[in-house]
Amino acid sequence: MASHVKNMTEGKPAKLLLTFSLSLVAGNVFQQLYTVVDTMVVGKYLGVNALAAVGASDWLNWLMLGVIQGLTQGFGIKMAQEFGAGREDELRRSVGNSVVLSLLSTVVLMVLGQLIARPVLTLLQTPAEIMEYTLLYLRIMFAGVPIVMLYNLLACILRSLGDSRTPLNAMIVASLTNIVLDYLFVMGLEWGIAGAAVATLIAQAVSGAFCFWHIRKITFLKIAKADFRLQKDRTIRLFLLGLPMAFQNGIIAIGGMIVQFVVNSYGVIFIAGFTATNKLYGLLEIAATSYGYAMVTYVGQNLGAGKLERIRSGMRSAMGIAMATSVVIALVMLVLGKYILGLFISGTPEVVEQTTQIAYFYLAVMSFSLPILYVLHVTRSAIQGMGNTVLPMLSGVAEFVMRTLSVIFLPMLMGETGIFFAETTAWLGADVVLITSYLIVMKKLMSIRRPA
Image 1 (tube, rainbow, N blue to C red):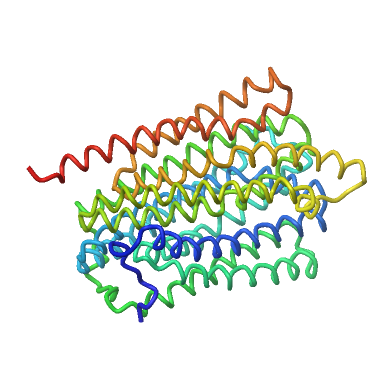
Image 2: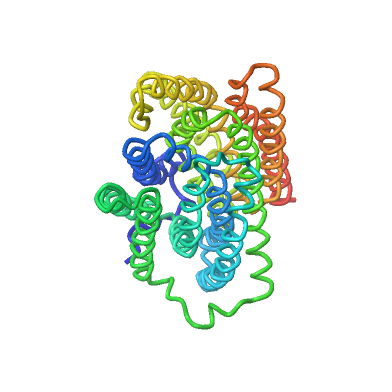
């Protein structure tokens, strides 16, 4: 059964992108829901110190997740191109090789995560009162790397085939699972911050199993034993696509850790306010990441089919949709932001007021800058779908440079609030690289494919 598989080389681009993205948006809503519930339970039930501890782990945790997502998304680009070109034998071999490469990468990442957790937290000057909580949370999350890799690879396989519905259903099941387990482990069994981490991993395992069950029903993806045999050229090509994306995410995360280093110097209340807004970051970019996944699949399939004009028209449609969406989300956050932030914060009235002020100012800065972020996601994903992951990697370097310079120098000029503008300047730096890169890559492709 492959009813959710979608060929995106025919039909109106705007409609295809919207229908594909809506399932992803809904799936991301549920994924963010269990992230938000984690934060609410930790912040309200365990207090500001526990909330700050989860926040102090964010970028190191995202470093691991970013590397995993980068690798699997890179593998998915090749799958999308082969599906668009109708090369089903090649598609099966790429899937099989991707599974093996993912397993090997999992072992390396899991060991590396455990080794670097404490040294990195120490280097970031994580406050002593939250250090052990943060370390415990990270050790559990890093032990669950195989689960995270499983879900991300399976979801990328499905998305490369135009199926965004199954990952949505997987996220719904996972979200409900996580919410129930959060209350059971944290409040019922009183496992504290460890309970939140375990609940998240079990929920991801459920979503991975759900995706696997559906992939087994896709008749043209019946993988033979020979498909798992690594082929040199295919392995190199998969890594050439995946590693730059992993590096891109990794260097962005390192930039984020530098920001966290500066944030940590301002004390637990500032960290808690910063964390509360960062937990809404996913809601801010929820549609952007969905449009990005849609563009990778859309561009990859159409490139495989040799339909370059459809890539151009799809890009125009995606940009229009993205801009409209970013404005709507920004308005919602500006109006309802203080209420939403209040769901994460507990303590004395004075502590709540101070934390909320910090969090809302940061939220307002990011909301006003949201169109910049949406341009970033759409453009970066279009270039990746064309099979070029090096130029998007360079945009990640630009993000790193701009974020680092901003977080070092803006506080000197503006005080602690200067930290909140680091994200905006990072997005701007990436956009300059990405828009220029898209124009260059598209011009080159058109000149190669244009008949003599």
